[in-house]
Length: 251
Image (cartoon, rainbow, N blue to C red):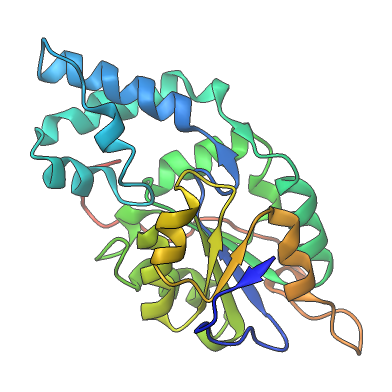
């Protein structure tokens, strides 16, 4: 584990961790690349799909990426269709499930704030078996402004009843880190993700981690024992993704 020299300190008692999804908890890059190429061929037609350029925008909402690349918004629907068709090829990253289980046992609230739509995010998390380990899942269509704005991190923390000052946001893209900082959470760079290390360090994270299990020392159990999380309330259970979607194109 390494920390940026200008990074803000990690809270003494971390109450919540918000994760980006793709590249941080699941390996979905090959599926995303294939779905993008198929959507490009269907909507644009002949020519080589700019897949590498698309991959330079991790963490962002697909309609925003298409706009930034000057590509037709109509690519979003076939991209989602093909992503769903290929979703069985997405797998959890090594160690992700174990880290989530350990954090839950410590009473840390866990949420996902993703560039995907909420429906797509919850679908893939269910397929890979991680959905029951999370308290909340927020998609980019469920907030007014996607990353790098702070809205999605703030919404996730609101849903788990945690203050940003007591929270970490873990992401593998500059947009994730910018969203975390703007929300007031500690910005944790996931160096195991889809962005190269130089790009992530240049984005100025508060903490940079080489492996997902390096989160555990940052979220040590409190001296007095178990810390309460949303799932500790009697008669309740985690209900990932209760945020109603905002009427925006899916991605």
